[in-house]
Length: 307
Ligand SMILES: [Zn+2]
Image (cartoon, rainbow, N blue to C red):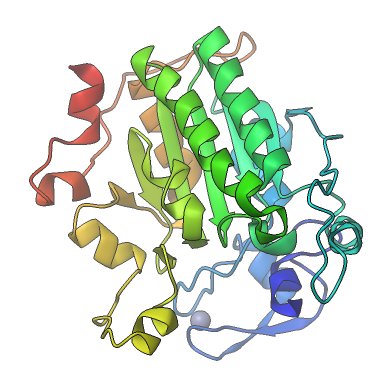
């Protein structure tokens, strides 16, 4: 599982002072330069992975937020062991990431608009969602409901936490139920799908948002193409990539990471997010362009919201 840890660095910027090879164009890039460009390759625009803390730091005003439930950690309910006992995996992931589980939840602001945010950390056991991560997102949804603030979830996950078995799988229903309550109360829910968003996360909370944004080139889907090929399938070119999902109406926007903050700010303002006292709203409300949903002949998400 060493590849899980590639996107994580001690200072949460992805910068280590070393060189990296761009997976998109194979150019050698200095990590320091990549970090200043939000880990987007300046040559080919390939979006390298960004860890959860860096994600919040780049999106939330002043790089600051109030974190919730940071101390929650799995109790290893199944006493699970494969090659490594589950508690050892948890300890190793904690040592690598500085986190107790794969989800960070926070209250913060984007251009002065308050949001309840959750960011997944792929470096923590593949960003897998277990009892703890799901509980944190559920609580974030409940805070959003209580305060009528939009909920923003940045996904980066391989799916359910296999070491928690069925307990992990039922979390998808729990989170979905909390999101359903948000929906019925007409509190906006926005997701940003980053590379990768797969498995049970893709099949539940990632795709339940009012507005679904994807980063360019992100892999988004339920099972890996290799699994489909092994079972006789022939995934088409571009299968499970953001651009293909936009074309087929599964996501609403594909947004360059360097434009994500401004896009979210326009969207949140349009959705009526409350403003923080220290940064009052200013300027006209702009209508963001939402394209993909229309192409699949279903109503655009924003139209549904405003119904
Ligand atoms: Zn490149």
